[in-house]
Image (cartoon, rainbow, N blue to C red; front, side, top):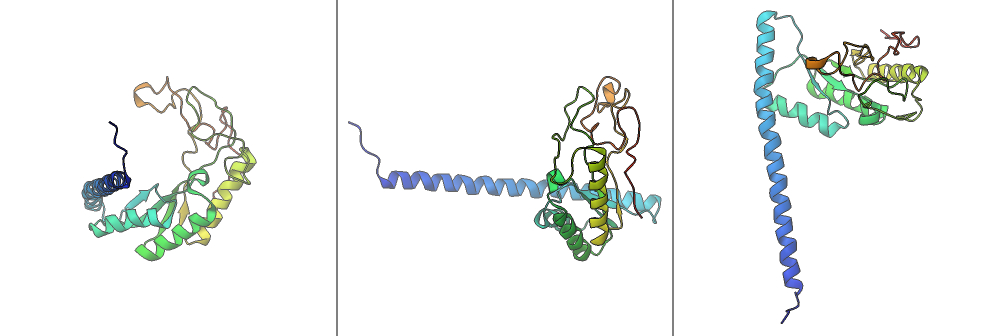
Length: 222
């Protein structure tokens, strides 16, 4: 005869699920800490090797995970706690992935004051078209991936100007466009083993169109 399952049975199931969730969360945190430990060893070795070659060379440590203060702090607090030295803090900013310009401003301001080092934006880009020039799907699609900036030459130039102005107002010392020359021509593919036979996912975000003409509105401002 079937016996109805009472409240105690369901409470036990909930408790089991909660224990599983806590265990999995702990395992994820431990895994992240383990990876950070190994990364820190690599970063320290790289820093020391660079300085051994030329003590005046500035070492940049860059994170793409800069879409919030919490994420940027997790990374840089973590490597600092493990004794990693560096000279310049570098961030990525893509409006379609990192959010509004106000986020960029707050992360730059915070990392400058928190770590006491110059800050650069090491990567930023925006599409000049929604079309695709090769066999590789574009990484970013749509006629206006970020509000106020159409996927046109004018929109690309306006976005880059806004990023530069925001970054410098927040105290960054420089902004790098990535990757301005990765447009769709033979020999510019993503796969080193088949560089002539592959395309790339960035051809609509280069600062050159598909015939090699540069966006006339792009300006790198001092």
